Each structure stands twice: as C-alpha cells, then as structure tokens.
Image 1 (spheres, rainbow, N blue to C red):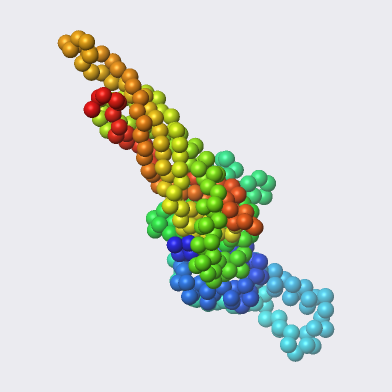
Image 2 (image 1 turned 90 degrees about the vertical axis):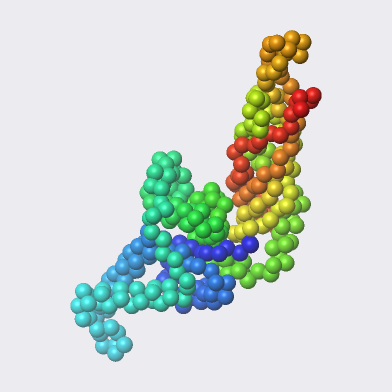
Length: 340
C-alpha cells in the first residue's frame, strides 16, 4: 500500500504555524488524517521539545506584553488590555492555555506515544561521531532530540512493518529519512495532505513511469548482488569464485510515497556463474582421491527494496538513495557437468 500508515510531525511544523492549531494547513490536514485512520506517532523527545517551545513562547509573549506596558502606559486605559496580575500567575495561565490547545489537537488523532525501549543509543552515538544527519556541523552538531526521534521511529517501523510519513522542513531531517526505506519525507503538511487525497490512478501512473527506466535500480541491484555470498547445497563442493552475469528487475510495486521520493519493492533475478572445487575418486585411479575444478551457471530470484528520488516532471527515478536485497547468501543447486 502506497499511503503511509502513520505520521510524525517535527516540532518545526508547529513552530511554522506559530502553534496556531486552527491554521489552514492544520485544519485541512486533520480531517484527511482522520478519514485515512492514520496513527500520529509522538516520540518522547519530540513531545518534550514541543512543551519546551510552548514554555518559551509563553514567556516571550508575556515579556512583550510587559514591555508594552512600560513603553506605552496609556494602554492601561484601554478596556481590553490585559490587567497586570503578577508575572507568575500570568506565566502559569498563558502556559496552561497553550498546553490545553496542544492536548486538544492531540485528541483529534489516534496518538501512539513512543518511549526509548527500542532505542539503540550506540547507533545514535555512531551517527553523532560521523556527523550523520540529523547531526551536522555548527549549530546542528548536537541534534540529539531529532536523532533520538529518528531512531525511535525506525524502531517502531521495523517492529510494526509500517511506513511513516515524516513532516519536517529541516533539510537534515530529510537526509536522515533517506537512509530508511520506511520513513517517507514531506516538507510540509499540505504536501502530505495532497498525497492522502491522491487518486489511486496516480499511483498506478507513477509505477508505470518508474518501470519505463529501471537502469539505476538494476545497477544498484547488481552492486548488491556482488556482495552476496554463494554456497552449494552439497557441502562437498566449495565455491572458489563467483561472477554476476546479469541482473533483472521485475514485479515493481510502489509501497510508499514521499515528496518527490518513494519506496519500491521488486524481484531481482540474478544470473551468475561459479567455479567449484571438490575432491572425488580419481578418474583414472579409483583407489585414490583427486581435486577437481569446474564451473556452473545458476539463477536465483530474491526480493529487493529501494528508496528513490523522483524527477519532478517525468516522475521517473532520478537517483537511488538506498537499495537493499533481502538475502545475504544464495544456495547454488546446479552441479558441474557430468557430476550428477
């Protein structure tokens, strides 16, 4: 299925709407998500960041209000101007109103709160050491909340087998999503809303456009096939050398769509040849063993998954950002000629 089963909204989505949960982008998004019955995933580091931003914005709003009182004391004569009832009470009250809006927004969704149970901290620290997105350089060097969120989302996707729509205008978040076939990136809520309203015929047309040129996917599959380990079902044969002769791509399916990207599954036909070595009775002297060597050809079919960028106009594959095949080793069944 090409439509994601769950969604994740980065904090900059809310910040971009000024935490106005009645904005056009949000108000048009909510009913579409409800109709599609998608889950809203809320990792703990993301919810903490949302609440921190609400605290900060509440304080900034009150500071601006107090600054207005100082700079324009005549505003106190305006009957609609808020009375000064003490900064502590105002902070508590404004924060309460903002958090109530946040909770009311969440009540419109099937929310799945995600903790740290599936988080591999070592993996995140490896990302940090290598400046792997969402980590970057400069101010982006310590993006631990985003990194934790990405790792938690990936763990959820692997556990449940779903594809997740990730909405964020952060370029580093986009690069992070490219490493995971289950995380589909969208730069804005309207882009995701557009997909959720898409006609199934458009998905079929997208698949047709992709199938017209599978060269990049085939090249990626060829590279993956060269990393395979081959072994013979009969353990008397030892595989000495292997060579990929041909790779074909068939049965392409669009399983998830992002913004100018999608995840594909397909079948990879692998034609290969191998040199086998084995010991057997000597052909001339049946009382002793000799070592023999011969080659065989073999064909296999494995499943593959690819994350690709699409050409905006043609919708054909522009770049393969990630390609995996489901096997790490292939069993050979053919025997050397005359050795059945």
